[in-house]
Length: 58
Length: 145
Image (tube, rainbow over all chains, first blue to last red; front, top):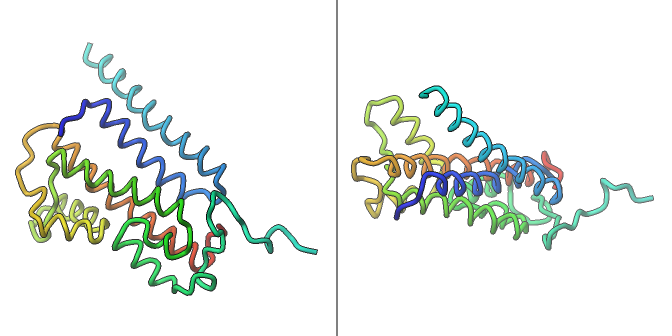
């Protein structure tokens, strides 16, 4: 099995966010919102860190 | 008068009565079941949707990690980081036992994606522990619903 780096990030973020959403909130609506927030922060944080590393290198 | 706290919570097709008294399962049994197989703790409490999502997420993460040829840690290697990795892997319960039994993840990690796979396997174990503790909290009433 091969994955691109970005698809690995997306899968990792998706599954982790689902578990965080379910376990860290009590109501379904809040679970969904928290899961979406986690997913956004995971993916956004990775992209931001990637650009930061690119800027440091150049 | 019935207060909000007294009303049973019904959400997402689940029974909402997921506590030890309603399910008949003790919190310790729920914790152990949740650790041994992802989502089993929530399943015992009648939280079908949550159980399914947890099982799907954790099993998929573990399976992707194995498919990426990630490393499955073994005990007693003497390396502190390996011991931490082993502790994380052990969180997967029976999935870890299955991986050891079938010899998955024993090849040396040579490519970056295999290293990602190693992290997928460890994180699947850690997430399973979080899910099992959540089921335990639901069973003993520490978490409301």
